Image (cartoon, rainbow over all chains, first blue to last red; front, top):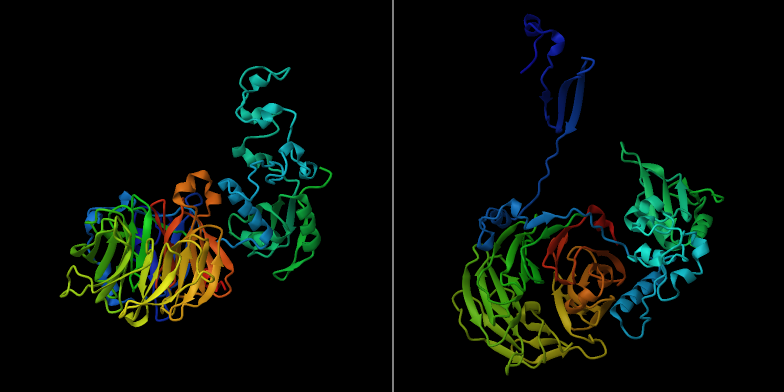
Length: 287
Length: 323
């Protein structure tokens, strides 16, 4: 239906109330299709014209006729009467990637030990002592961690209720504390939050900021770039919410401070994707 | 990639097989009903009802008309692929472990387990529509323990078998002699769980509980490559498109509950076929991977796990850029 000026004039309502219908021209021999849409802004009453040019492309997929025929087969066996709501086939919600292996053999070995330890295999260190501060297994307890100062984690070892999860604080009988129930998130001076709130109390002391990244740098690229320096606990690439493009900076949290130091030393001023990276501590040192 | 999860089986998967066009995927599991799925979207097309035990293996004819399944109910059944009707049943005195159609689909090779007083054996049966009968054309015995896989060699002149006795044997079909077998030096040190031929049949890969997968030449049985992993290997497959092999496995099912998911190593691991270095892993299963199969076009692969799921993965475009 095309819009005619004369018709509008005769009607009771004004010209501005009529929104012309969408016109589609094409696709022509080059596959170009032009869509002309009219839109009216409800608030201002202004009419705007939107022209979209689209190239229509036909993709031909060659298929064996036998395959085509098999697509039309009727269901048999238990599949009779099944419908989409039965959920025999669902598409995974998780995006699964082909995870590249770690570049250094060291962690692989560590992983293997872990595997062996969990299996209780002889020959390997069967200890299940895990340091919560640095993540080392079988070496030392959390309170004896030689790296605890470096990590700057707020671990308080003098409070037993902090170290023994599930132990009611009343049992420890800490002086000056009410003997009522204290949720785990508030124990130990409320400095440490629960696991689910990890992002609120993230340890940013080993965090480095990378700026002057190219727009198409992804998390995976940074993983590849920074992984050789040591264990990474988090990578965050800032994306523009509207355009979906990288905003050119990222944060990387290392597990060990030494690794972060080395990464800064090595990669500050490093040429990456035609740009010169700037790598620095994310937070001022004195903070 | 977003895998397609197919939940039709109620028990652990045992085997996966694509037809030659790659549009149908056959899955066998420890429940009694082999199932066929569409290879492009994972829609269930049908199930083959009739077995009364775990189904260990299957094969589909070249033109996707007939399916052969070997089951622990001591029978091997022939099915019409498109309707799910049973065409014939071969009965044995022990569970059938592996089946394979010969080139031309006139013969099939079947391996049976040692059971009661019968020993493990390899049977050759005629599966021509006119010549269906109970008797075996040939029966070979010799290996101890289960024969987990039997496949036909080039031109149906040989049969390759592998199983719990860790030895890969190449049999002469005419005489029933073992022409070649692997020795202690090259061969696997623990039970061989899987065997998969390359697209052209010139080489094949075996997976073993000794945590390695090995690539062999089909004619000479020379060891070409060894891929080592850190878990027992239950399933192997060779990509028909890329120089990749994929290896799946994990802890034995009986030990799974003793460790967490990460330590169980339940990913499908990709290795470079020639350089033997690890390319990557695809996670997702909650238990060990028991079966792997590549689509013959090499653009998707599926894995079946102890968790009862089949996961169908269509590769992302950047997969093809991997070296």
